[in-house]
Length: 128
Image 1 (spheres, rainbow, N blue to C red):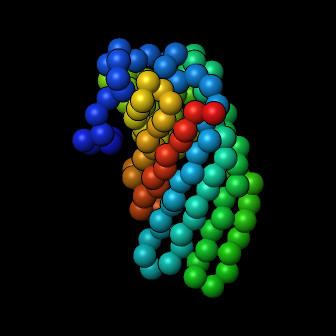
Image 2 (image 1 turned 135 degrees about the vertical axis):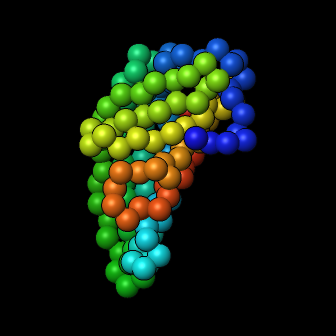
């Protein structure tokens, strides 16, 4: 979880607190032995009832080549009363987050990713 980030302003958040479209950017760092770094950006949409969709672009570099690809996902989410939340994608990968500024911005973290070799993935999102 995101320690020290504080909750949202209301401290009575529910799944309805995540509703609408958010523009996001995120950075992914893999095992230092691979020298792989990825950045990604796009739109994540929450329906206010526990479901999300995401689409965007991912750019990865292994310090020699750069690969650019489209990304997409969909799945479910659960919001806790303190504004922390979990998002679970189609592959079972879980991202943790924190709602800030009455739902207008989000912090994202997935240091416990299921993907082999990933050390961390952090991002931010702003409501459109």
